[in-house]
Image (cartoon, rainbow, N blue to C red):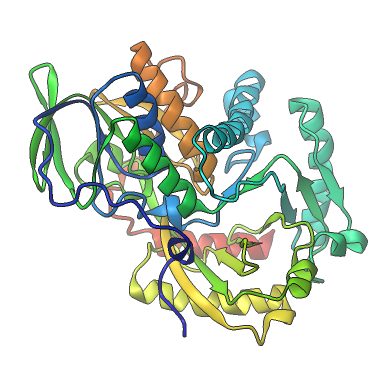
Length: 428
């Protein structure tokens, strides 16, 4: 029977926190958002003795932090060539180093806090849908080595069955630095660790409004108001009207996943022999991997609107067709789970950190959130403790609004973005 629920959530007891309890009268830091950004920042702040509380409209870890594919990836959403053109060579190198450091940070937090989440440096495979894509990947090998000292290698089509049991692709690029994990187990472990350090967790406690009150902030929630010395906005794709200035900068994009029944070991080894994290070259991309119990976990931008019952159901049909194109071997395999989550995209497709209206923020991971949300949560917390975020690499370039400011937080243009990306895939 197909379950419209998150497979990962069935592998762990998700955090409960203190539902229905009123918030404390005052905290040093109020964190909006109980995903990886908020949890990792709270861990740092609480360990330094600050009174810290996390507020989430849903359960702690309910959102994209536990609904993703569990891929812990190098790089950014934009190509590094684009980063050099935009920000210059020196800054691009700093940003890429941050992406590598983010994986190391996840690995360290998992190890130090004894989080059982299947973290493994398995590497990722970027597969080429067309011969032109493979030619671009070939150029990437020398570029990454020369500019960033980062070594990746080509897997030609005639040898790709050592990496992927599909004849659909025209070769691939292998980056062995990336990792994979179970995202719900990681979130649950981070929540436990943050709570043990002294953080108050307040699930099902929507923040309605944040305003200045003397030298503090007044944070008005559904369960009462509190004063906070500082506020950290960590809502990413689930940002809402509580912080309207930031809401106008983030587009919520849906991403959807299906998971099969457990596969036998022989078939699983045929599909992804080295158990890499895999994604394709397209704008309307697919991404897939094997779970620890040998399920094929297959996701993609099947719909651009965030998850609803309708978009989840429709996306499951699309993803099943896509999966069968990649792997005809799975045509008779049952799909047991389907779900969706919401990603946060900035208009420049970059992560951003900084301060706005006096509040700290870290947002806009664009599908790289497992690693980057952890990294920005920790490093923004460290900047808060130091008293300034100006030196942070992701605070050093503008955080744009929509062109002509034609966006108020309601993404009316998502159907047009979907059509544009489909057109790009046809033309590219």
